[in-house]
Figure 1 (spheres, helix red, strand yellow):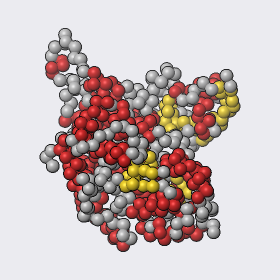
Figure 2: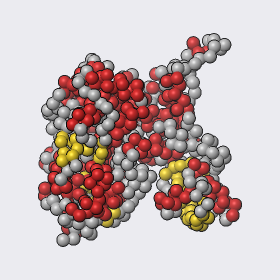
Figure 3: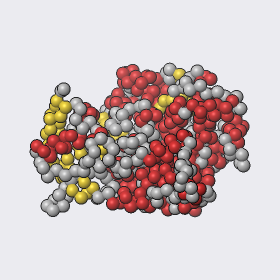
Length: 291
Length: 317
């Protein structure tokens, strides 16, 4: 298995622990990644609100670079994945746009053919690598851990562009957690918005969203939350200490990136997974892991 | 046709005798084709005539029978009961969110209609349109397709009910209202212009999280969230200087300069003095080595990105 790797801006900056734990997972599983170092930011659903054509061309440039390598794209960010798959669908459905985008790309010597596939690591693990094989690779099962899945938005909606999992009742994270030996804690809010997109605009409302869903996950008995999106992680972990001020009591639930959870089960030393960079400590949850 | 016994768990509320809503369980024999509305009718006719819900056309046109079915706002007449059972083992039926319940599954949609009215949902015609009434004002197909898709809205309230921003922000006018605004903004016969765009910031234009719930739940595929993005583009073009618009501008600049997102710049330039509220957090992030650097190296081949900016009409940069 080999992919053109698009880690996204956040994993290369504030969430470097996600980048590092992904490297551990892919090394361990023999998944080869060739990083698209010259690719630009996907625009995160924001850039298109100023100039949607520009955003389409820049993403098509990224697709073209992967196509010229003969590889599909792997992301570790739900938002990148959602933006890129939506633009891919737009270009497929709108042939005049497809032509205009390619006319512009030609001027920088690139050509997008429409062949590349875009996958989140979650999807690649489930569909390309296979859960049975992953289960066999687990050396430290997550026995005794109750994990609350936080899907967020961009890995599920709009489903006709993403074509992954059932947006009404997703099961991908639950199957992954089970393959890693853990137990899933279900709660109201698994597929809701973490609040991050309005954090800079409607701060209090964003915190209220974050606090409500985290509190629900805790009340469902979860030891930790796992998310496939580093932007959700910023909201749920980094801003948790701010968000919990809108609740009567502290929330104090650790939030893991998907790659960190997988790496843990594949035998990575917790010290190597960057938990020290999280706002909410992971120690209590680690103690619950049965030896 | 195969039939099965299905469990319908319905949230009931009778303001004359109940202090708070409570669930009642009904067992209904359903076949593969029956809709949730068919099953509710069956319960009403055969088990409990007091069960109250709205319905009219039964064909997904009138928008009356929206309710929360297994957690999501849907038209009961367009939702097959057997598929819900296959997915959730039961059919959990509750009144729509974001609107007060009158009785059982009937909600007061007053707030929804107030929000629709805030967007002035009528054509403000140009004089050239009204001056000669003997002449038809035809649109070209591409223009017609945009406003026609938006005009498909049947005002069922599903997007409003499942809008997460509306739950926490009562000033946010909601997806249906903004989709309706864009229906007229995108119509070349309408001359609302500034009168339509300038009130949008006050109506919560930047409060949408683009969670895509409205896109998913719309039974007519109106895609309100896409309309909201279009309105934001127009608002930015008209000189919107609110925090939301600044956020978009910093994104644009950041990708032009380095090809990547500069998180530190995004944060500082969007929030400005607002960052003072986060001083404690910034210190902790710094100690943990998680604070993003303000100085970013450009990606290789940044010239390609900048040329694409110019070719895509961002020449002034």
